Amino acid sequence: MIRQMRHQFLTDKECLIHTDLHASNIMVNDHSMKIIDTEFAGFGPIAQDWGRLIASFCLNFFSWYGDHEHTEGEKAVFRAYLLDSINTMYQCFEEEFRALCDKNRSDSYRLRSLDVDAYLLTHFQDTLLYTALNAASRIGDRGICYDLERLKTPDRIYPEQLVLLMTIELFLNRGAYKKITDLTDYLRKMAGKHPAEAFKEA
Image 1 (cartoon, rainbow, N blue to C red):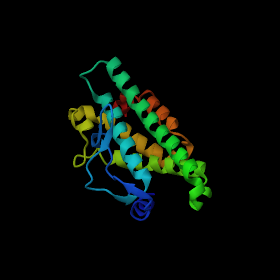
Image 2: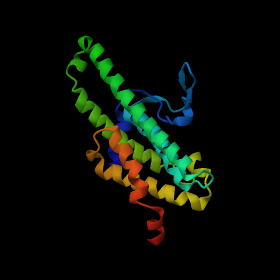
Image 3: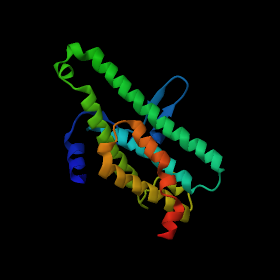
């Protein structure tokens, strides 16, 4: 699977992508949004950008399970905000993609012959793979993200375990995920299904 993803990343010149798109590269105010940091920009699969971005939200989401500076209520509210943000972003992308296909279909043979539903499903499941790979790549010492680095080393263990569980799930069972809310529902239930105490006992 990793080899297939590598081949896709190197050969699928779907569009211009950022390739390192995470939350800290996006600047927003009341009137506009800017995406910065073009050191890795190139042509590739859209799923890489989406996977990298969703992974950055997932890493922040999991990091709050190792945080001891905020109340449980505060952490729950922010985790819910992160999942809602993932849903909103991806749903807006799919809506805009469909609208653009409809608007430009008459001018493009490729769009006229495109099965948009099938394309978006394949794209989404590819995105899940890139999400898993990008998240797992940011928990090692050399590539650790700030979301986890801010925690004391013992407090990182449980969030990192959750990241690895998500990675395994998405690699093995991505075919069961048909829409973005399937992913966020899974993330929402993870800590209940895999409590920290279970890892300590193991």
